Length: 246
Ligand SMILES: Nc1ncnc2c1ncn2[C@@H]1O[C@H](COP(=O)(O)OP(=O)(O)OP(=O)(O)O)[C@@H](O)[C@H]1O
Image 1 (spheres, protein in one colour):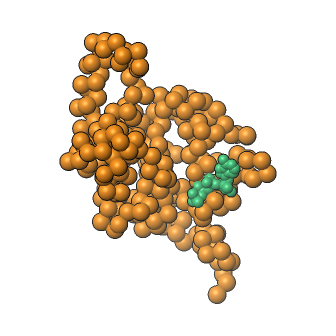
Image 2 (cartoon, rainbow, N blue to C red):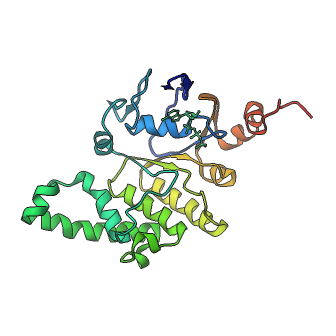
Image 3 (cartoon, protein in one colour):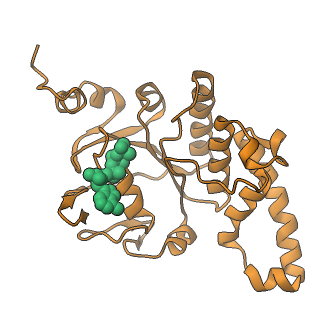
């Protein structure tokens, strides 16, 4: 993937298995968020392809990728600040609803049923992420850690097979990180696949089934947490010095 003269991802070959927690790590600017943007249809890759669940999805529109079962959260929280937590989750679920705007405006019966089901589903998801006690509060009044979990609930509302989390632990305190770790495992345990970008190494090492390391748009290592942690190229990329330098 190029942006003018910048090659953000270069010859990257990644296979993520169904039902695993896969982490994408690497120094700032390595290309991690660009991978998310290419997978979710924000950018059409200048070369290469992306396959998901038997479909080729590179270049597809964002809503089409969502419909196929891919959802994401963003590096910076993106919520509807004046809507309640529950409404934010219901908006997330709209990607799968039948009626849309016209049905809502006409008050069609199946729209009313969807609305009722949507409210119940939203509560369930907020319970699942641990924010249901604040579901009628405006998103902007939630503590930061709860906003991040609300974002995850909103992404889950589309019932994704693959969930992409972009730095979910950023700005969280240690207790919130432990809860997040547990939440990500529970998401995987419901049968979903999780692709994670994260800078917090203890979180990454603690929950990932496999890890790939990017540096300047290229994959420099891939494997189990213990393998990646001890890889000389990875240590070099992070420390910015040859691995054997003393
Ligand atoms: N829309 C864009 N236009 C131009 N350059 C871009 C664009 N998006 C990303 N880049 C460039 O691509 C490279 C990879 O950026 P990317 O945001 O994917 O890195 P990252 O690994 O997610 O970094 P970070 O950990 O800091 O979020 C950077 O050099 C960045 O400046």
